[in-house]
Length: 343
Image (tube, rainbow, N blue to C red; front, top):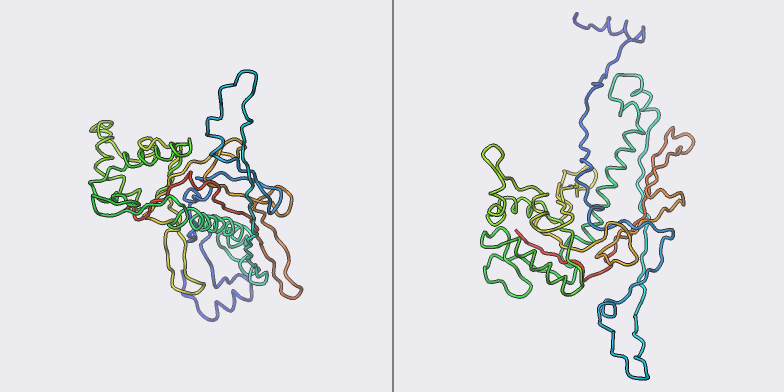
C-alpha cells in the first residue's frame, strides 16, 4: 500500500472516502458476566405480587406440629384445638437504572465500520442493563441472606478440633468431615421444623476446598477409573449432601466508583455457606426460609421493564431505562443456617 501523504488524504476527504478512525467489526472487548453465575434467584422462590406492599399469613409452627388429638370423654366432647395465625408484610422498593445515547456521536459511529453493538447503541445499553440487574439482585441477595448476622442460626468456623458452642471445625482443616457435619445440621433443623434443608449455597473458597477435601475424595474415589478418574463437581457434592439444589456464588462486582481504579470482589461471602429449606415456587401449604417478592410496577406483568424515551429538545439524546421492584425477605428464620469462616 502506498504511503499516505497530506495531498492524498485531502483528496480522499474531498471524495468522502476517508475514514480516519476505523474499528474492527468482528470483535470488541466487553466484560459481561455469564448469566449462569447469577445466583440471586437460585435459592429462594420468586413470588410475583400485584401490590407494592401487602400482608401474608403465617400459621404458627407450634400449633401445626402439636398432637392435639384427645380421647373423647363419655357423653362429652374435647375442647376445640386452636390454630394460631398472624400476618407479616413485604414492601417492594423500586430500583432504576438509566443509560443515555448521544445521537450526534452515534451518527459518526453509524457511518464507519465497527461492531454491531457500537452501531446499535440500544442493543449495548439493553445488554448492560440486564447484566447489571443480575449484579444488583445478587448484591441484594447477599445483603439479605448470604452473610453473617442475618440468620439466628449461625456458626463460625475455627481451626480448633474441639469447637465450642456456636463453632465448627473449618473445612480447610482436614480433620473436619463436611458430609457428616451437614447431615448433623440437617437433622437438627428437621427435628425443630419438620423440614430437612434442601438447598445449599457455597462461597467460592468453600466450594474449592470441598473439591479437594480428603473426606469428600474418599467417598467418590471408587466411582472412577484410570480412563475416567473420579472428580468432585457441584452435582457430586449435591448428591453427597443430599440436597435438591447446590449453587456456588460466583458472580463478581466492582465496588469502586466511576473513574476510580477497579476494586473487584465476589459478591457473596467466598468463605461462607448457607443451608436452607425452600420451595421451588410460592406455596400456601409449605414454608420457605426466604422469598423474593417481585412487583410489576407498570401493571403489565413485566417484572423488569426496559423502556426507551427521547431526551429534552436540543440535547439530541435518548435514554434507555430499566426498572425493578423487589423485597428479598427472610420469611422463616428457623429454616436456614449460616456458617461463616468455613475456610
